[in-house]
Amino acid sequence: MSCSQCRRTGDFPESGFFHIRTDHPVLVQSLINLFNENGLEVILTGNVASARYINLTELKEFMIKSLETFNKLAVESYYCSVTSSMEEMSVFTPWISFQNFYERVKHIDLYDIIQQQLFTTHSQPIVSLQSEEIFGYEFLLRPSTEEFEFKPFELFQFAERAGLQALLDGNARMTSIRNSAGAVSPGVKRFINFLPSSIYDPKHCLATTFKAAAEAGVDPNDLVFEVVETEEIADINHLKSILQAYQERGMKVALDDLGAGHSTISVLKELKPDYVKIDRKIISFCDEDASKENMIQKIVDVAKEIGAVVLAEGIERKEEADIALRCGVELAQGYYFGRPVPTKSLAAAVR
Image (cartoon, rainbow, N blue to C red):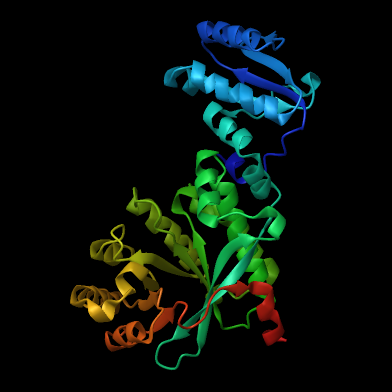
């Protein structure tokens, strides 16, 4: 992963020139043949084949035909770029993989949402189970307007396929921090998700996150960064270094989805987070399933050993809240206590 993956890559020109590069002479000829078959005039510059496109639909159609024509090894050898004119081509032209380029062209609407940061946050309350008072909020990525609708999970899936995961994840963290500044009172925790795979060097990659918190005037102690367990923990030592980087700045860390299969008790003991969140699948109807109640109790017991606070998420019924409380869970989140609302709507309560 390079630093360029955290930077905005620019919009696709509505019309312009696209360029495909390869270090294999035979594949250069294959590109020339494909361009000719599709009625495109080829401009050959060394190992780069270029052609003009009239609109993004034409570019998308060519990329689809390319995938249908070339095998996997050929596709993996190609790198792509796009410019408004041929004169813009230079040694500084950024190149991305063929597959990343294809995904961006294919889903140009999602690409624009990430590039232009057309998103905001909603916030869901986290309460003390004992008193039901607000302890904090989880900040969730949402569309900024109805004109640019998206499903958060699908946006992150696209970002991964398009090589934009680090950019989206970093900007989502900073958006949550900035939005929380005027909406949540000091002392109230702000739980913010992050993807470990988007951070290759914790001290370097998290610099913008730390800067955003300082500029927004947010107390580091009020920030809790959650590991989003949508991916397997491939390198526990790397993840540990990320959590330590947050904690060294006075911030807290949380492991999400405990009991969902990705996180295990041994991982919990190894990482020693400040907070552990029990997955909603374990919480759901735990009052009717003794094995779920036993799992909750087991997580609570281990959390006590390492000094972590347990949070049960996805609570939708009083019976579930009662079981969690009986097992020693301290915090709770779910529709039973409150649904996510636009973060800006919380600001009125602060003033």
